[in-house]
Image (tube, rainbow, N blue to C red; front, side):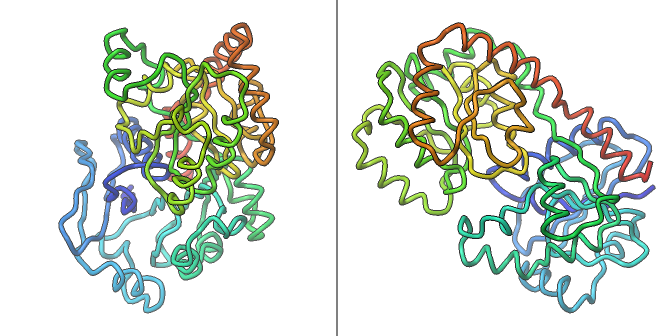
Length: 373
């Protein structure tokens, strides 16, 4: 079987969210399956780099059309069917909502991470809102032969928002990288601590710094903590409305105890989690929410929000709060910072919980869906 895969999301210079998901999925998928042939494609009028997947049954096709022209052609003119450009494929795996045109004979498997752009449009720029409207997510779901939803919450949103036929939706939770399960030497921990000048005890927040991640509430809750032993370390690339977050930090009475690391190397994340006193993820909406699971695997107690898919992801292995309640978050962080026994209980539960989210399991299930098994 010839399987096409859209890897345009892997053209990003800094991976997060969907790009990390896609890269990890494909790495394991190609390791598991040497029988089928895979044709990956991306488009860029300028020189760009995508990862090299060194497998004999994997080839990469690069198109060099101007992106806007290519996208508009796929969406409105429909002159070009991508599967024909690839020399014919039996099925196309599409890892997120993108401009795409496929011939009727090509089977379509779409991965849906979330519908945040529908449910929380206030978290998106005008440009992003227009992009999502043009792309026609509802239409793509209708046209898909099979849909992989990364959580029960996403499946529910697809059915309630788009009226998607639930029979073609399969829920496959994602995995996390093996690096989060691996032991970390004292030397490696010391190196990361020195690299980022980390304090002895700190509360870690990690993710793109945008309104949906709710870092403003975290800073407000941190300011009110009675425990002054912990600092707040915030890691992640600058997202939309970062300036407002920066201004909040500048005005904060706890400014001197808050550190912004910016985007951090993926290889440093396990140690950043491991060294933290706790990991706090007060997001308002997530299709799944991998960072809490990563922190659990690394051996760090987790506080997250009782919102969207997060309870489904963490089970009873984390403390959960109302993402809009500053006092609630303050109370829970103070409690966890002072209660070593509670922290150990959460660490043990978290490490057990994280074992459920292995890429080998997710990739094997998605392979069955691709091959219509």
